[in-house]
Image: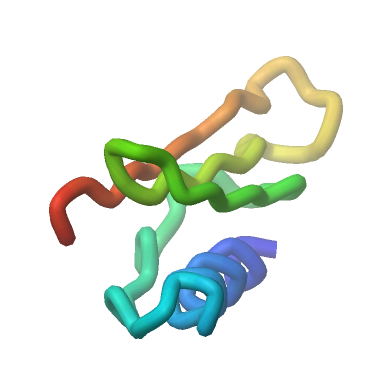
Amino acid sequence: MNKLIKIAALCALTSPIFGQQMTAEFIYETAPFPSCHAATIEETPRGIIAAWFGGTEERNKDVGIWASRLENGK
């Protein structure tokens, strides 16, 4: 599932809806959690933000919301 986040972020950041390619990089190479699900990505006035649930398994108590924000190309 971790690869899904990487692919979704890469596809969204290189999508024609942004008018041009902004970047082509992964949010992370190795996740600090074994599984993730329900990824989303959005363009905001302050930059692009991606969010997803990450933990050992869906519905477990260790699952949290993770996010990554791209501001000013960084």
